[in-house]
Length: 395
Image (cartoon, rainbow, N blue to C red; front, side, top):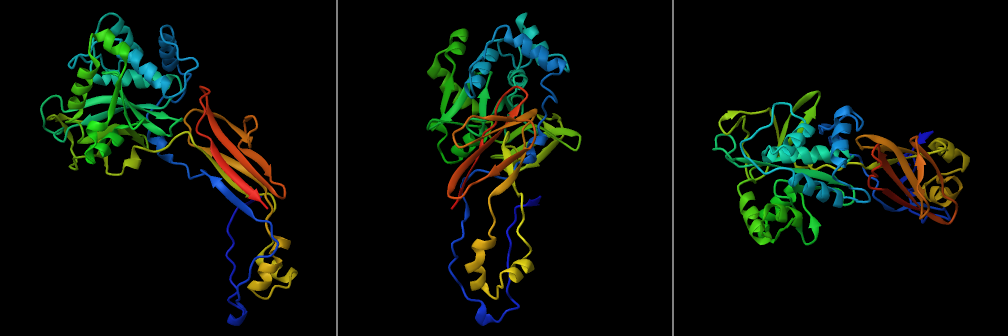
């Protein structure tokens, strides 16, 4: 079995006068008409997430949450908003009350049931852990002032971002205020907000706040939105999240309006930080499927073709191509960058999805046909990644 390749043919041994151009003969062409089949981004491996959706901590958290929250029949991003709304009403915010060291999200929720209040960081942690327990990739993000190194208290704020398979992007949610952001109807992440701010469009961002949250806290929507916009203003220095590589756990910091590297936080010791100015180091894609094309039968080697068809120049080659041109009979190999991967699904044209517990698909396209392959990955929570679509003609 050979890998699909591009063959570059050189007739440099022939007389220049024979290197003439010619229109291709009656060859049937394999043509990719449409495709989003692209290289997988492996930066998802820097995420710090549960190794399994079935470990005891994750199962216990999901069981606890399910007793009072139902996300059945909801898709993303509705799931994210519903979970955020639920977490935002579990306790009142307290800037100075830290939970015991190594407290789990379940521990925090159980303490909150008894009236304990927590910081923004705990809102971010709990909402991300709950979403992770249901199979959605979520992370705590830290938004920090330019003066984080030696500024006073309050130089940072914590919220969350969650990967949307529907929109193929990270989406910002802030469970302390039960708010998410949109611009012209599009869901935003924090880097999107920074870019809009840089363009002078920060005031045009729509902040959406849950009515249940407003009612629970006796707040007025427009007042909260105005206060929130002002609240975020200092926190566009650095954007941070957890980061792991080669067994080392640290933070990664994306420079926004600040560029200096720092190793202290508000004058105190700080966790190890990896710095970047490349937004792709934080905003990579997830849950995608890559299709690798392998021809079942490889073309003969070039010398064999030249000999068999008595080819002397490019004109001969082009006129005879229909006799030895590649035929679309493939074994497709599937790869993915989905955490907690379980299996693949695929379909042709508008057919039904077929479950696939291996990583190969047989695909033969008949003469004169235009066919479309869809392939996607499914994780162990049953959540489907974004489909890869490849439309190919053979005629």
